[in-house]
Length: 213
Image 1: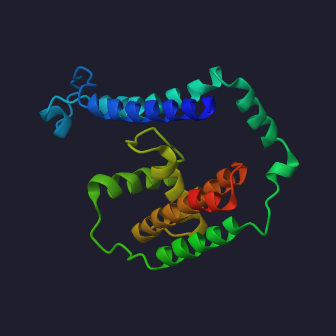
Image 2: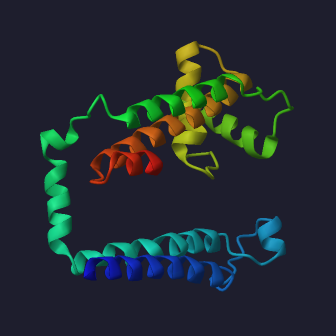
């Protein structure tokens, strides 16, 4: 009974932390730093770091509250990590109906990937152009950050396009676009794998495992 009350309180605090993060979202602001770049941010005197700070606060508030239960129930978390090293725990049960649900999801995202309408629009110079120019420059002189403006990450904007161009021995806009679509498909596949693994560790009835998955 005490454990159930603690879980209810913990769940309520997590929900409240999410609501708090939502309420203070607009209040989280840093002073505007004029870098002499004309654009939407400079027109509105908005510090671009505000977005990162807001995301961090919104995400870490509930995470910190959730994991604060470690201090109240250290034995529970100790047993959890010990079970992760147990070969019997890591061994999947092939008769588990969760595997069937996993394959259903995999088939679904596969058909979704194969039915995606390929992008035929003109080159978006602000986004695609920036990524492709960074990748092409890296392909020519081997550079990564020097001379290129990176906004989303060096792997996504430069390295992945460079790898795909090297594999197929052609530098094209279409190849970069289809690589982006494939990355989305691959990420969905990894998320399903992660969900299946988490479900396997849960010590609950089979039907609840399937609902969770």
